[in-house]
Every structure is written in C-alpha cells, then in structure tokens.
Amino acid sequence: MGYSSLQNTTGRIDWVDYAKGVCIIFVVMMHSTLGVEKAAGSIGWMHYVMQFAQPFRMPDFFLISGLFLASVINRPWPRYFDRKVIHFFYFYVLWMTIQFVLKTPTWLGEGQTPVEIGQNFLLAFVQPFGTLWFIYILPVFFVLTRLLERFDWRIVFVAAAALEILPVHTGAVIIDELAARYIYFFAGYKLAPSIFRLAAWAMDNSLKAMFALLAWALFNGALVFTKIADWVPVPHDMLGLAAPEYWAGYPGISLLLGGLGAIAVILFSALLSRFSVTGFLRYLGAHSIVIYLAFFFPMAVSRIILLKFAPSLDIGTVSLIVTISGVLGAMMLFWATQLIGYGKFLFSRPNWALTDRNEAKQARPALQAAE
Image 1 (cartoon, one colour):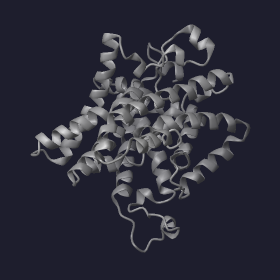
Image 2 (image 1 turned 90 degrees about the horizontal axis):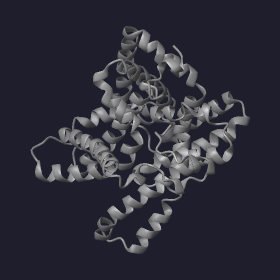
Image 3 (image 1 turned 45 degrees about the vertical axis):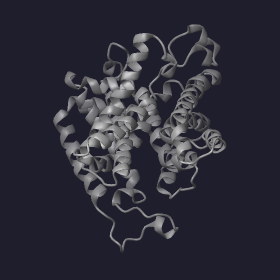
Image 4 (image 1 turned 180 degrees about the vertical axis):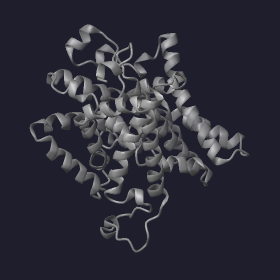
C-alpha cells in the first residue's frame, strides 16, 4: 500500500489527520487539567490520563510535523521561507497579541505596570509566550533541518537523540525545546517512508496492531506510574537539577517512550481511520492549528464558570468538560469566521502577509495544518 492509496479524495491522508486529532486533544487536555487543578488546589482522575499521555503527546506532534518535509525541503529559499517561517510567524505574532490584549486587565489587577507588560510583550519575540511555543519553534526546526542537509543524516540523528537524553535546562525555551523535541521532528522527516509502511501494515493487520498497542500501553503505563527508587542514581540530580520522580522521565527512557508512543499513535490512528464513526477526530486533526491557536480562551472561561457555579462536580469531570470546551470553543470561532465571512485572517494568512510573489499571485488560502 503506497502513499497514493492512503490518500482520500481531498488529497489528505486520513490516518495523519487522525494522529493530529488525537495529539491536539491531549495538548488541550494537559493545559485544561493543569489549569483546573491549580485553580482548585487538588487533582482529579484526568490527571492520570494526562500523565499517561505525557511521554508521547508532543513527540508525536513533532514527528507528524516533519512527515511531509521531504516533498518541500528543496524548494527555492524564498518560497520555503514564506511557507515554513513567515507562515507561522504571522500566526504567532497575531495570537500572541490577542492573548496579551485579553490578559492585560488581569495583569494590571495583579499589580503589573503597563511598562512591565510592554516589556513582556517584546520579550515574547525571543522567549515564546505561553501555549504558542509550538508554532514558534516549528520554523526554527524547518530552517535548521534544511541547513543540516549537507551532513550525513545518521550523524544528525544520533546528535539529536543525544540532545534529548542530556539534561539541557537553560531556561531559554528555544534551546531547551530544541534539545528535547528535535529528534522527533527529524525522525518524522527522515523515516517518513517507514512510518507510512507501518501505518499501511496496521490497516492490513488489525489484530496484530491491537495486540501491539495493548503491550505498549502496559509498558508505557508501568514506566509512567512507577517511581524511581531512592537508591537509583539520576544524572539530573547529580548535576544539581530537578531529578525525575517517575521512570518515564529518566534519561534515555524518556526518548524510548517518546518514540514508542509516537509509533503507538500511528498504529492507533491507522486503525481508527477504518471507522467512519470516528471521523470527527480526522476533522479535528485537519484543523489542529485552529484549535491550537484559539483553545486558550474558551478553556479559561469554562474553567472559571465551572469552578464558580458547579462546585459539586469532581475535579476530574471539570477538567474533562474544560477540555471539551477548549476544543469546541476554538472550532466554533473558526466556524463563525467561515459563516459570516469576517475574521478569516485569524486562521488564514491574508495575501498581504505572503512574501513569495508567486504565492501571492495565486491568491490561494494560506491556512495549513502544522506539518
């Protein structure tokens, strides 16, 4: 089963959108659950779901983001830079500004001065702000990967893996996240043919794929929920950094679980893509960047309302409802812009923001999934 046979009538590959749909839900779940638990001062059952997904949530997102890079990496630099740098920079600046505007009244109420808020706004151009760090660092990965094309990919792969294992904690988001995540992005780029073959195998061998997923779930869960014994030496601790509490965070094991988890999401997504009833996940995945950009506001509003007016609900249920609200709220905003015809610039890069003249002449919609 080749690439073309995996594509649907729109030219998209279903299981890829399913994978992005799964990952974006886990991303919203993490922020929703942590926000609810911080506000409530206690944890709920959703905390353990979030903890189970922690090893593979972002690794799979980055792996999928690098999956189709081979088809565009040799484009002329102006077009490549427009689609892989300016594209994400536009959305980052736009939504960073929106978040600052919405949060400024709260910050002023907490005692921050307008000057301090302005300084934080400028700082966000070099230190990614809040939930938007993913689309900030993607252009860095795209440019870095193209610059590294002159080197043997196996050397780059080993170096990226070593960076993930090493305890890189500088406080600079770009450096720390590059060290922790680049291996998965690069793996998605270089191992794409094998990844597509794996997805095709899962579709043709459903029972074997389900047994593989069960074995992975037991292995992942065991390491995620098992604490490291006091007598076990931890390199992070030796360097004076915070040592991981559970085995899932141990150097080397985190890389293993990230890779295995990414494979598991691929298998799971390939299996789900066979059932039309799960099509909503494909739709969410195809619009994952919409959810990523806009979920913060409905998430925050629903959290405040539920904690204030529904105190009898347990924290886990509140976290689940807030997660659903974040996802659906973002999509409702997107649907509204499509229905009324105003505000499309929130999710589609307008022609004036295109730096490649050939792209501007074609005047085609600029909204892309974070691939």
